[in-house]
Length: 133
Image 1 (cartoon, helix red, strand yellow):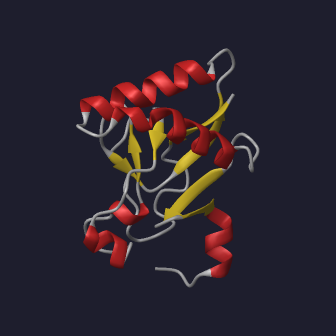
Image 2 (cartoon, one colour; image 1 turned 180 degrees about the vertical axis):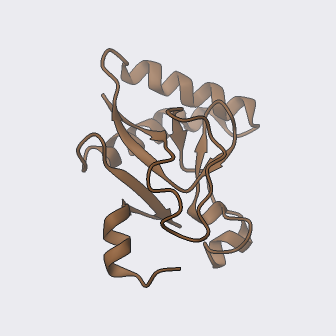
């Protein structure tokens, strides 16, 4: 199964990159705060972040990873558990898992992606389509 994991790969390509997650930990896409929703490049950074399920920290880069033997039910439970620990609505985990699995199905394993609010793309696409920071 392909899923998103935290990665330090390509960190520094943007001047406002950060990676406070554990390398390889599962990540999800947490909603941005009001400030981050207006501009993903704010100091807060939540509008450009992926959030670690275990560390509860953020990173601006995630990698599509192939986890053999990991099931959708296990993935959903990992999301549910993390959401509950963080005070979010854990009942959203099945829908979130389905959405994230659909998203990563677009790219081959090893693809590094970044986020700009609701848009998640391979990092090299942004580099070609947007001016550098």
